[in-house]
Image (tube, rainbow, N blue to C red; front, side, top):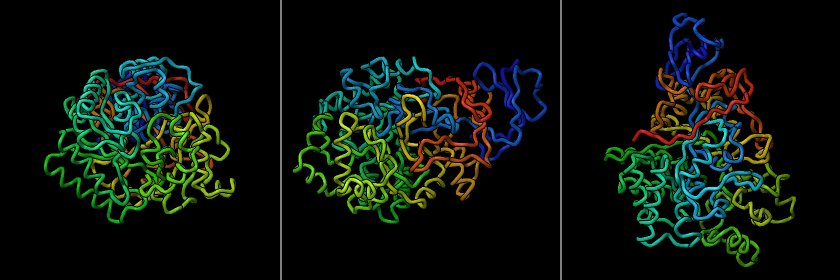
Length: 535
């Protein structure tokens, strides 16, 4: 007796780019059979759902998110489940919630931390995963360990990359995290303290990832005027360490030359010819979001939050900050303030969604002063303050998507528009990234076929990550499934109204249980913490 049969849908298995009409049978959380219509006795199932006219695909695998703490605060992952996501990979860009040397340090390394969340504490990586295990999760979760968190565990907030013996300590700590269930190692070289590290500091930790057969994912140092140096550094680090390299959100930023994307792909292709294992992913949007504090130069980010706030309150230091010749965003340097919006704030919720030209006029000050004022006003919540800029080019995203090894990611956080996280935002597309991908790049513009697109959010990331028995519709695989209407799936989020759920998703199953049914969220949260991976 099957638990459920999805009857008569257009099935994309996540591997082939073509589809077929058939039935999917589910039993004990796994796919028991996939058959042509009429081959399965419908009376052999406890329940049958007619999905005729709908697309049946593997649940979407978001291989780059920052939900490390939002899932601790509210594990339901509403913004993700509503658009068909069944697995998230956290701990990206060098930022992970563990390991920490004290409970007080959790706030410093936890993105989107909120004091209202009640949770058990942790020190080690395995302890952090245990805390996640005790939460009712709407999605499956795989966790990377971040270089920035490792650095802080060994050196605190010191403005240095570490002596050789300290780097050895970092590598041993990465090894321990891998043993405790980390699915990979990540770095964020535009963020403090990753901005301090050179390849000689990163290679020993990447060698550990290589030993375990796990990915090294990197947010490279530069994607604008010196894009080639940033990507070459990532390739060199992977070549020296032997690690499998995943270049995160690869599209160049505002300020890069027009040929940057094409040149970067040529660099990757050449490195592959000499046995470097390299793949990459893109955000399906032309908006680039990040921490507002990342605009500060390295020296201004050193130490803890209190140290940063003191510098922001010092008039002389503020002028020095604004004079930074190499800010993370060149769009700030050229003062295109109308193309930059406030995305997330704790004490300035009333102006979220406004651009900084508007904010400057409203506050009667220069927009850059408004930026620094807002950071100062956010106080202890400084690291949760986000902004977004129109820094990507659709043509670059199109070119990347057409590469067979490219995955598509959200670079966002799992949240909900009610409950403890109702005021949080991770990105302008956080509530609709997957839906927008299938809407804008597939249905509206035909950049990819539907089958090609589904591979980029199912089997390609699952295989790259070494996730076992997920990412494809096959008998014996876990029943992570998304059923949607390809003619109506859409993102409904805008800059002014970023908290609108996607539409067009009919049913979502996580580990064989319905977390969405007939377009409505159910109370079911059947996600699991993933700790075992193919090497």
